[in-house]
Amino acid sequence: MSPSHSFHLHATSTHLRWSNAIPPALRVPSGAEITLDLPDGGGNQITPANAATALSTFQFGLTDPCVGPVYVEGAEVGDVLRVDVLEVRPAEDFAWTAVFRGFGILCEDEGFGEPALKLWNLATAPEDGFLVFKPASPRILIPYAPFLGVVGLAPAAAGELPTVPPMPETGGNIDTRYVTAGSSVFLPVKAPGALLSCGDAHAAQGDGEVCGSAVEMRARARLRVTVEKGKGWVASPWVLTAPSPRGAGGREYMCLGIDPDLREAARKAVRGVVAWLAAEWGLGRVEAYMLASVAGNLKMCEVVDMPNYTVGCSIPLSIFDS
Image (cartoon, rainbow, N blue to C red; front, side):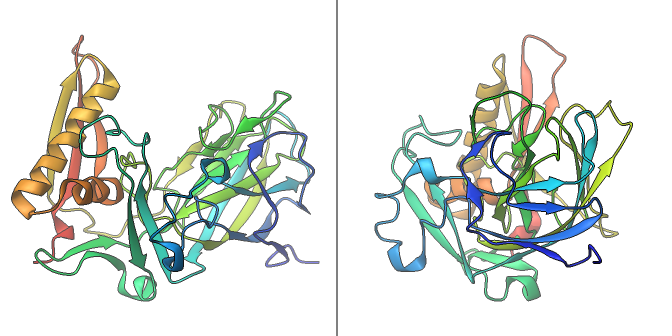
């Protein structure tokens, strides 16, 4: 049997804890291609039909479901599993972004304590290459860049770990927007068979995912998994990004946050972007917070001039189509 296009996992093969004791849902040879049907990061709890009540009944215990585990033959402790992301595409024509009470980098700031929900139309996003954040005054378009938020292997230790925090060695909910089609993720194997699981696909996200959610979508992903020997220096998730088109980039507006506490510096930077979007572009503060989460990028600009760190939060000016 050829490994190409031979293996598939349905969204019913999910788990909500990381553990090397979870029985494999699928067994594949090294070099195999796998397709996976993935629920969204909220466990499919939010739909257009229940949008009015979804946040009031939302169960955080069902978030970040992972599809797997996949046992990769030949993967031994000390090896590296290379996961080539071949395709990530929406499984439905909608997605969502939400502000949840008690979650997000500004959750303690006034005005961001109440839940808020935004629905997105994905029907033409793959063809258009963008998502419509706001249709007019100003028209704001977010580049469509689907990726996998969760890519991880079973941990070495016995017991169970929650799926929301990323694991330092074997990944999981890394929410790194560079894990798009054309990229590769390298993960250190800590359990026989590697035991790969994936999930939490996003149609777009800014670096930092500052409001706590991105453009959350149900998806189908196509991956290739390959065992690599003799790479013991890989001690945490590493990413080889997809090739960038020539001429990519453009001007950005960046707000800096400076503080001896790194998290507070990041908060200051995000607050600045929210204030700028409200003042210059007429967005509501919660709307601006969501925009910063799906299109803004947090950057560590300075980490040596102690006692203060400098963190920037930038918005690409190309999203404003007015």
